[in-house]
Amino acid sequence: MKPSLLVARAVFPEVLEKLTMHFELTSNQDDTLWSSVELIRQLQDKVGVFTTGSERIDAAVLSACPDLKICANMAVGFNNFDVVAMTAAGVLATNAPDVLTETTADFGFGLLLATARRITESEHFLRAGRWHRWRYDMFAGAEVHGSTLGILGMGRIGQGIARRGAHGFGMQVIYHNRARLDEATEVACGAHYVSKEELLKRCDHLVLVLPYSAESHHAIGAAELAQMKPTATLVNIARGGIVDDVALAAALRQGRLAAAGLDVFEGEPTVHPDLVALSNVVLTPHIASATIPTRRAMANLAADNLIGFLIHGQPLTPLNPQVLGR
Ligand code: DGY
Image 1 (cartoon, helix red, strand yellow):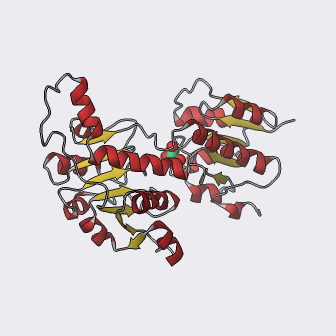
Image 2 (cartoon, protein in one colour):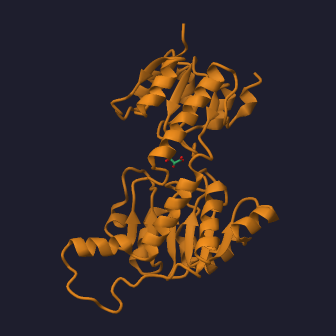
Image 3 (cartoon, protein in one colour):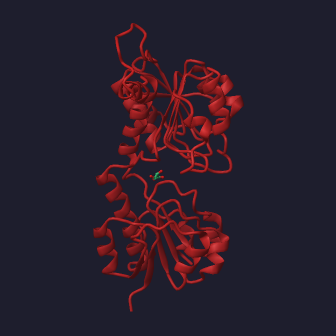
């Protein structure tokens, strides 16, 4: 008999077909948003689950689902997993790194451009029929080329953004990260390591690409925003909760920060009304990795982790490989 697997959200039909070759599948192709009670109900007797980054797997879920052996996230971020609890329960966690790096870096840079150059704000103005004549300072934004790009969180995506800024736009790139990169990687990225304080003070554009954790919760709050230039822009493609959205809205409203580009939000898909009310914010619905080839590659990697582990005993991108030997 094939092992039983749950696919918790809608996914590409060909990925489902691939999984069907190996597993007895229950799939949420209707894409219903399940409560945690419903998720636990659906997980009964399943040895594996395909998640998309929004399904919370914690100690309560694990203790209610004793057959579960692996949770495979179709996302590089895994803040929906309590990896410590999963490791304690002997449940493997996998994510989907690398395959989305360049696509997400493209989007981060695009969001920076849209924000600094006021692209969506000016489009709304045009569509509203308010464009009657040219004016010398109409939607004048911030310079991107030659300016100073700050990156907080210098993993693979941060490095991709640094390369685009340094080599494509002639920017001075400074970064802060928990660990400094080796010299060869810094040279390849054209990036210089600085303290977080110096990063905030010097940058004209700040892009956030750090993972969300208790440690990075509100890494950008009122105190950090106060250190930034009033002409600066802030771009968040990492996770909601890294920025204090209320403090950000206040800084933007009071002209203490020029603009923000946000793809992620505290409590998404709800967006704080103070942010929605502002014209100097570009808002997108968590789409940084959203191209069809990349989303397909992410889904295939999650599926290959499930097949690799449950059928061949070898996952591709484990987050807690220490459970493998048990
Ligand atoms: C990720 O992979 O973590 C993205 O945020 C999901 O789109």
